[in-house]
Image 1 (cartoon, rainbow, N blue to C red):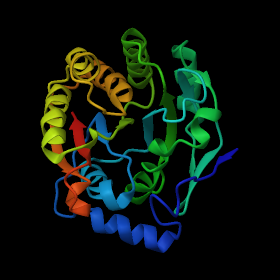
Image 2 (tube, rainbow, N blue to C red):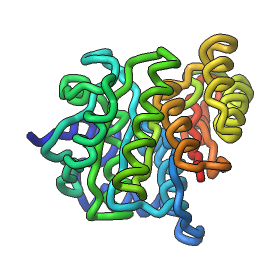
Image 3 (cartoon, rainbow, N blue to C red):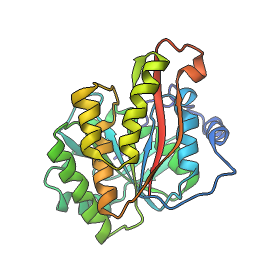
Image 4 (cartoon, helix red, strand yellow):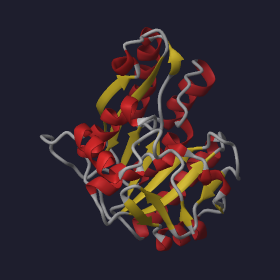
Length: 268
């Protein structure tokens, strides 16, 4: 089955040539690429968050397989939904699902369920795919949509993913799709996002959960994917995080009264 694009023409161009040109405008052509274990990248419309996404992917070597961990905005499907087979289509072409990786993940993790309903209208994974295609046209994907906010479950999934990746597909890049603070002033977003970003950079998923969920109610929509990604990355040997770029929607619109924050972070 082909997963059809649902935000082509709205979040990003539906024309292949226009899409490629827009992505090229976001690329940091002078940066040094590194092998990384994990990424946090934003998933808004490209006019708002594309520069952050393009920059963070520019700094990363994109391997043959990538695993996208995405939040569940629609709330369709089970707590942990994995797309089982087929391909994902974008204006740049079709990207094959890495069926071997999917099967290994399903065998390792009892919390994962084969499901397509959670994915069909979920934009937060889809907008990652054209960037991955641009940097590696031979990319294969696995995609998990996460609705669970249970910290123990998120850690279990992160550890299970790490176990699989240490056994097979060792170079796989794990991407946590997330925007940061939503619809607050620039000053408020900068303050809250700095706190969340610092915990990600410290590779501290417990404090990230505590600050974002329990103490400060930071509207970071991909907090749950980020937690699983951090746990997975540490199990794979991650030592440091680096903030590549942070911007807000106000930097595009000029309206700083209600902004959305976007962070591009690499974990290595």
